[in-house]
Image (cartoon, rainbow, N blue to C red; front, side, top):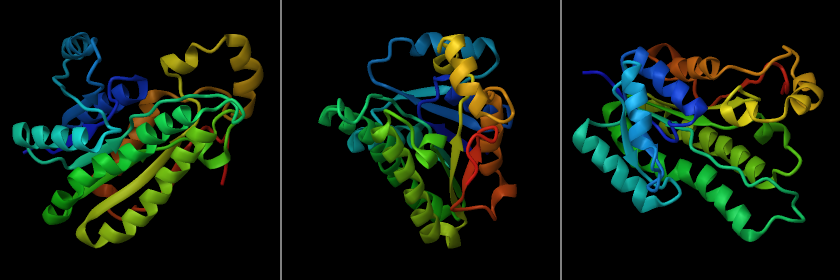
Amino acid sequence: MARVALITGGMGGLGEAVCIKMAALGYRVVTTHSPNNLKVSDWLQNMNNLGFSFQAYPCDVADFDSAKACVQTVAKELGPIDVLVNNAGITRDMTFKKMSKADWDAVIRTNLDSVFNMTKQVMDGMMERKWGRVVNVSSVNGQKGAFGQTNYAAAKAGMHGFTKALALEVARFGVTVNTISPGYIGTKMVTAIPQEILDSKILPQIPVGRLGKPEEIAGLVAYLASDEAAFLTGANISINGGQHMS
């Protein structure tokens, strides 16, 4: 029986690349989408046209009960989740002076609380089966900070604290928990930045001189989800073209 991989926020640029990579490796791929997303059927059809029969389930990852209901439905219809990729996230960028409590709460709930909400639903089963993989998608800005991102950087840094502590608790059960911290990746969101800004502000920070490819991030996620990565846990792997070396 093929392993089940659940990728939150899998309909975006990076999440989509992870879904495709995992499916190509033989996983049964499930993704979540916000309950009010009207483009789900179009995305699923586009993926089906490419040869990928994904499953997509509504889930507000920031809400514990919604996460619980989603995972229960997936388990009932497809089987227990073997690989969880916590990829869903949002931004509400502005200086701290302008940031409201609502802006702070929205990012913390979606980017950090969601990691607890989703992982809580799958961890007992992984431990009982003596195998599981959790991959948390953080950011280079959680490592080095970024102007106008106190909320986002705090959430992404907190994600790795969660990774390290949980990895210690579940390692003896054959479950690994790791973080990856991508830099600037050539998703639609990043490539929408004016070329002048990319050329003058962003690319000069990246020693390899280019944006990362979503497929490169997906390849790292796939490795961390594999049997070969069984000795790797509690790590934060930077994949940023050398932009930030820690």
